[in-house]
Length: 293
Ligand SMILES: [Zn+2]
Ligand SMILES: [Zn+2]
Image 1 (cartoon, rainbow, N blue to C red):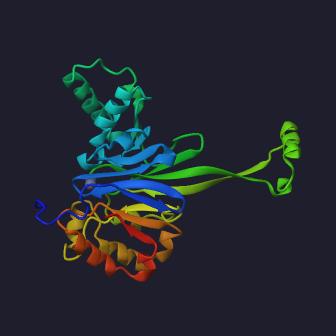
Image 2 (cartoon, rainbow, N blue to C red; image 1 turned 60 degrees about the vertical axis):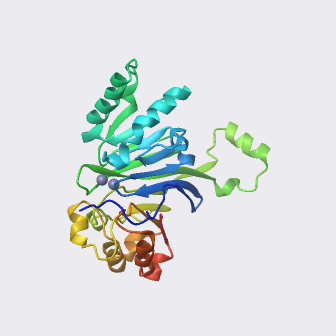
Image 3 (tube, rainbow, N blue to C red; image 1 turned 90 degrees about the vertical axis):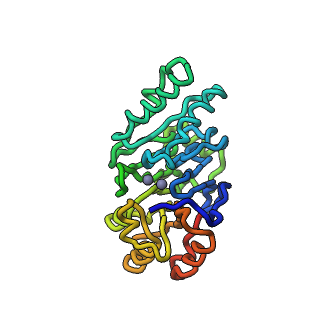
């Protein structure tokens, strides 16, 4: 299916900085080469096909699946943090792939004649679809199953947000302090779904979803555009842009309030080919969508 790229790549290798709904994100993605999304405010990155220095400064890595273009950076991530004396990388990975990933990391320890890490077994955490886990005090993550060629998970990150209860609004600080000392609850707490990340996926994941668009930023893949047959995309576990457009037309409510970022374009296309395909996306979708190029 794949041929080596003779056309200039649509993304020459530099990550792209995005600012969406108050979220500052930096991402790079070319199908088969590398995909990663850095979320510094979450101290996390989603997938890690290769590991830029900036990604190694973020503690958590959430792998959607272990195809090399999404996971190879984990080896470097651990090594860089170890070199800096930082807390060890914390890697979340579909549980079916967890032991094999640990074995890869152990193999590098052996090849590099390093002492086996005593924390590795707890640093690589197998995740099952339907599980919720804490990323920090403020952030929790819900994992869900994604249709791809191998086991794959999507992740929704929710923030715990608080606002002063209406009865306390406008009160001077001393009165708030006194209320707090009396043991009164000053804040209303709520959960805000900030980001949903889906790595490689067929359109099936979206078709069976219900609350997909209930987040600020929704990361999706569109590997193929134009003349590539959508049946080919499905066979390789991917999505064709035309399938996304058709789903958006049929079920616009599914996409809720989310701003969509499309990534993972195949390197068989030049930049202009992808841009031409995006120009044909209906305006209702195009105005709330960013193509990572
Ligand atoms: Zn991929
Ligand atoms: Zn993949």
